[in-house]
Image (cartoon, rainbow, N blue to C red; front, top):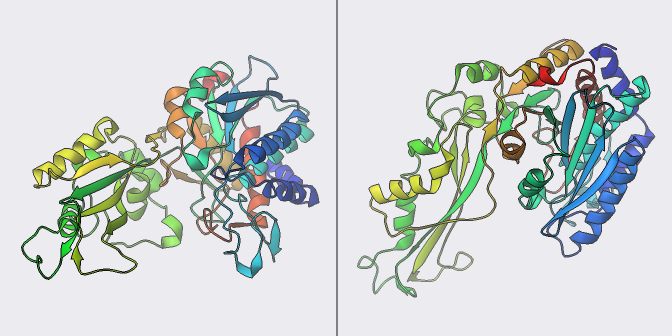
Length: 455
């Protein structure tokens, strides 16, 4: 079957009541990874997914690392065929009940016109269901996939994927594959099928400057004592220039490869909602998001913001997040910041890492696996998909690229306005249907190839 035929077959499978019923089942599973009852919902979700995959001929393997469960499902048709690894996460962020419009319950799938609402529909349960339905469509159409499929499902991505790296190392034999073909994150636009090949890294630093044990009267001591809030504010202005361009060279990749520039030439990020004069000079908005690094001040704290008092605060803290592009020398990010602050006269500022971190990694845009998938997508759609060398956000791509040594190709099924991680998370039904066909065509293209074709 040609890719266009598979595109239509996949769409028909998603355009019906069974798909919606399954989406409702997934939405009702309150898999907030940070909730006190997370373990109950985690097991319920993995049980449901195991039932669905088991019905498609997958063998189930439940594994655990430090109390965090994972599911490895394998459908092996012939060891001589290519092995495809895919990945999903069944956990979600908190539901934020009470904050959704129209009184919607985050744990109940609801409709408004042709749009579906529910926690996890975009991140990542809906994307999992798209890929599951694409697999079903392939099996119904062909009777076999024509390749071996391994599905890794975790339940803690929203809290930093604890245990994922260890599981991939420990279970490397079960996870051995020729390519990763998985789904997470947003397309560049709802109507634009998209591929991305990796992700920017992310690390958050807490900068703290403490001058004394307690505050001092701002009248009696103002102008005669150092104010750590002012000092820290000045220090922050050295990290970027006034237009947001990074001033720490070792926090950037140094240059944008020609192949990356070519891939991003026609990309308009997030519908054009960017500030043209903000960020690294000489780069397009797409290059700044998908091929360069950025630093953002996430929060700044000094004194008592809810009700300021007339006192010079004794200390100040700021949280600075670095999103860094593949090619950035990430082994010395903290050292580079330390050296930068020292060079600018701020040796007293304490630096600590805060929260989970992701490493930057990406598959080259001219890799054989990428060329093959792009060719299939172009044949199915009648035009090339958008290809992003790296997602602007961060996800654990480095574990698959570096730990397992796989070329990584991500096919996102949400869009920038989906309200993931916020109230009113949603996706248009039409996007889910179209994405299922697209994934069916891409997966179908693996049949008839050899393992070495993906390397």
